[in-house]
Amino acid sequence: MSTTSVDTPPLVLLSGLAADARIFAPQKISFPQMHCPGWLEPERSETINDYAGRLAETLDNDPCIIGGASFGGIVALHLAEHVDARAVILIGSIRAPSQLPMFARCARPLGFLIPFIPVRLLQVLTRPIATPFGKRHAPFVYGLACQFRDSNPVVFKWSLRRILDWSITPKVSCPVFQLHGDRDWTLPLRYTDPDEIVAGGGHVLSITHPAEVNSYIRQILNEVASTLSTAREHHGPQQ
Image (cartoon, rainbow, N blue to C red; front, side, top):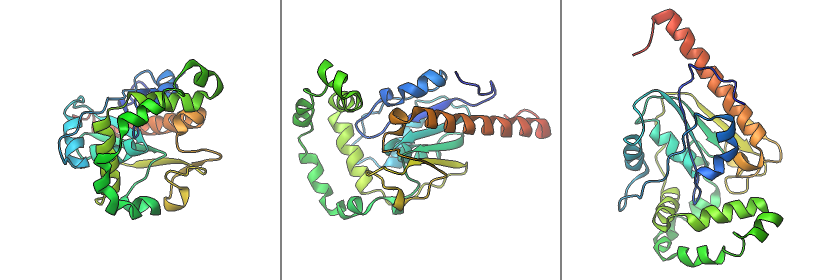
């Protein structure tokens, strides 16, 4: 159960590449007020910042705590420039383009090949995994396969392209908190400098290490609530 203050701003978390709200199922149980917006279909050649601006228009105009896993964390950083964010929480994500792994930076010249990725075919190939047999014998892989199978190919290709050409670090005015696994091979720990490290944690921390992720989120929510409460005592209610 969540023990956060009633004064805590709403929590908005963005899922990662080829993922959806199911990746935060353990967090939804502990934080019923959590909102995981679906991915909008991107416009042609839309930048991450422009996309974040459109996404902001779908959210309430109230103070909030935003965050995301993997690519969702990158978008959350840009989203913080468009909403009244009181904190950004990165879960298996990174703070700046300079923290992208070497293989992603080396792959940038190959970005023109992304439109030719046979996403539909790959989704068909995951069907044997996304079955009751897969769920029984490999539940973690089953969950990821189900999300990839249901993902929008247009969103998938746009997200992959934006990862490769990400070059501008968002100017975030609120605190940024970063949780990372020491066995994350997708965004390796050696390229980034998180505030807290999960021992044995891979890339999908929200599912594999929900207790650690929930504890970290709860700590941040309570810290933000305490800060807002202190501000009200000294300056009166914020507008």
